[in-house]
Length: 227
Image (cartoon, rainbow, N blue to C red; front, side):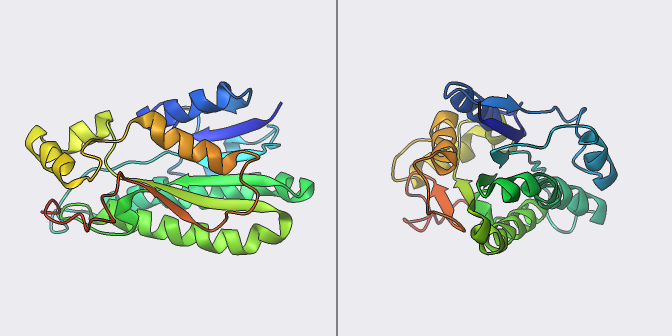
């Protein structure tokens, strides 16, 4: 049985990813934030002590997004966001990739965001973390390709999740939908299916890419909602 290590598996998108892999007969290991503290390198290493790190797939879906204008941000807020959204991904790849390298096969996907490509008022910490995550994915893809390990990003646009509702008033969500050519938010299942394809046997050559799943938002320019 193939095994997936999944961070953020309790969130809306993460839960959908967990389900699509389980439906395809994967064993899914997805620790809670209490079990695996992504803020601290030492605790990440401690989690894996005496654990089997033999996973065929790693998906990083953990992330935080607490909007604040830059003038109100603290360095601690920025560091926490970057550590959970980006640096923990790098640290987990270092832990999980040796077994993949040994077997000369593996799939790694980071769930990023359209904010890894553009910016928006009040999203400095989140945008910075996702830009860094995207760059990390590209570099890892180059370094791990020789070992037949494919590394990619999936960047959702606006998705029907509790986080979207928390960070945007109803009127702003209505404006978002009006700017999306598909004229609706994505479902979590639609994002999960893209992640699954990149990790499946059907993908044998796509690596170092950022697959944008946004209903055409970026293609249309997506202007008018960033304030």
